[in-house]
Length: 199
Image (cartoon, rainbow, N blue to C red; front, side, top):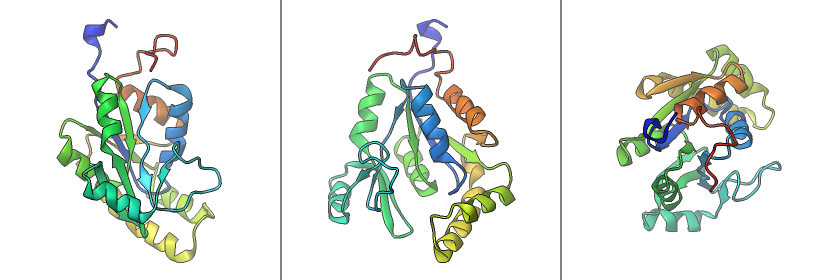
């Protein structure tokens, strides 16, 4: 495909209910498609054992997060389960200005804010194979207490109901297939690693 036929780089938002496998899909894209820029959100929640600051999230205090809000430095932000999450605006706009496709993983609230701030953004809903499978994954993760699981189940049902607000749906039945489909939606499926632009 020649340069004129390539889709213009734009922001693609990946959202979906907790437990659907967004992190697994993102990690596979990170490994296979390094030319796709993955936006790193800021959060006030505690870092998990497997996470790296600046790679999975920018872990900040609530005071620092409030400064980002007050300074208009976040493209979107939301509070979930007592923690704040937000997307640094400068990072996303900088990558888009260089022609790099940008992928942003956020929740439903954040996706709605991005749609308002950047109407050209592509919103992709990552769906489970079934509601039953999603509930099984949420209960079986082993990382949360009963009250957190109850909140997650209720929140997941709300997010499933919002699927119609999104431009595309990708079903995460197999993580490799879901990742490949998402990369295709970013307009990068025609690039091999050897052809991918270096940044």
